[in-house]
Amino acid sequence: MEYMVQIDHIHKSFGDNHVLQGVSMNIKKGEVVVILGPSGSGKTTLLRTINFLDAADEGSITVNEARVDAQKHSKAQVLELRKKTAMVFQNYNLFANMTILQNVMEGLVTVRKFKKSDAEKMSMEILDKVGLSEKYHCYPSQLSGGQQQRAGIARALILDPDVILFDEPTSALDPELVGEVLNTIKAVAQTGITMIVVTHEIAFAKEVASRVVFMEGGVVVEEGKPGEILVNPKEPRTQQFLSRITGGINQKSA
Amino acid sequence: MDFAFMAEAFPQIVGAIPITLLMVFVSAAIGWVLGLLFALVRRADVQFFSQAVAVFISFMRSVPSVILLYISYYVMPAVIYFYGQNIGIEINVSGIPAVVYAIAALTLNQAAYASEVFRSAIAAVDEGQFEASYSIGMNKTQALQKVILPQAMATAMPNLGGLFIMLIKDTSLAYYVGVYEITATANLLSMPTLNFIEAYIMTTVIYEVLSFVFNQMFRAEENHLKRFRAVLAAQV
Ligand SMILES: Nc1ncnc2c1ncn2[C@@H]1O[C@H](COP(=O)(O)OP(=O)(O)O)[C@@H](O)[C@H]1O
Ligand SMILES: [Mg+2]
Image 1 (cartoon, rainbow over the protein chains, first blue to last red):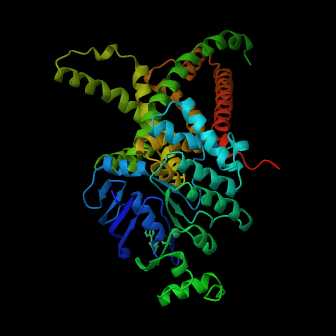
Image 2: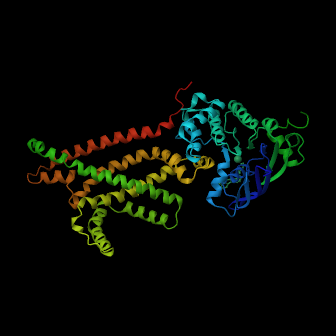
Image 3: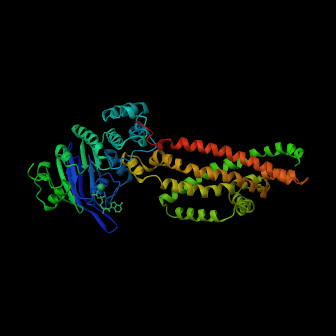
């Protein structure tokens, strides 16, 4: 199969609110796609339709040959799709009743049926990689936001997903904690895993994105290489958005 | 104060504690499991069952416990008898001890109240906890079992403790259908000599002690269950 992720004409409405109006995207293995767009443009909803946390109304999602049709699918197909994806949430959403180690192990033990001792060993290795060696036995409520989000990334990584979905992973963090999480995400990107990242961190996007997608009003307005979209956007709407979030200092000069 | 009476009666009243606790434990165990099921059925919005549960709960909350007990005691035997006939068995209904009907009534009562406790406790768990569970590939049962219910239990525990204490006191109603639990025993012992005051003092002490002990146990369990809520404790 040529593409790792195929998003095919996805439509999604909440009541009268037509949030996604036919979004399509084909993503190759190892691509890091950064999605930009103003608040309310449907970025979160798009990510959530990819793993069917929200079921789309029309269209289909294919991740590494697991195809789920919005209008005709079984529970088993959705579970299959979810096993090929992982998500990192804006609010971390670590399991509050589990320690950090248990959070990371849980998917291996409960979903993948690994032996507990194996799962524990693998989880510790991943936690070491994201710099949480000291925190195995802490509960999420005992960690800083940055530490929680790195644990969230470890929980996603351990499942060896075909694609990881990041929904504004740093926007709930205190500014001084953003860097540590972005660095972790960069390290993940370098492992060659396919990623879709919703973020407003332009510098980060320039550095790690293989493609930048600008969304507004439930459609993809413009997409291309970071060097094009972030530096020389063609669409006025993209230009306006970029100058708003960078305070107008970004344009061609740099 | 007739201390001689008290000295003689007290051990007998204490001897009624086991039957009281039997009613308490069986009613709480079955009632709470039912209550949890009811809460999940309502949450899942299962056609027909959800509405049936809602009607049941509102009925249970408005009917006085004594009436419920009488319904159980006078109506259930007939139901059991005719059900037995229907499936071709002659059931000797009069052989069923009264405590069974008392337990049935208390169980339904507990189920109704516990289902409300569980419902609000589950609703209090952040929706993101479900989403994170699904995002790693769990199905709904796994999410409930591993993530949602452990958190909901911590929230529910104080209210369940309250229900439990209420249940201990409610077992005294079984007196009305002739179960020799604590209150009934004390009352019957006091009748010949009219030592009611002494009898009520002793029953009060026993209920107070039971409540205190179980209250402590629920506290301990609550603290154990909510240990994950430990706040950033001077972790510098
Ligand atoms: N569960 C929901 N129910 C109703 N409306 C929703 C829901 N989720 C999102 N929306 C609406 O969909 C639109 C897009 O939201 P979202 O995807 O969160 O945008 P973004 O992530 O780009 O800010 C918004 O108008 C929002 O109010
Ligand atoms: Mg969003």
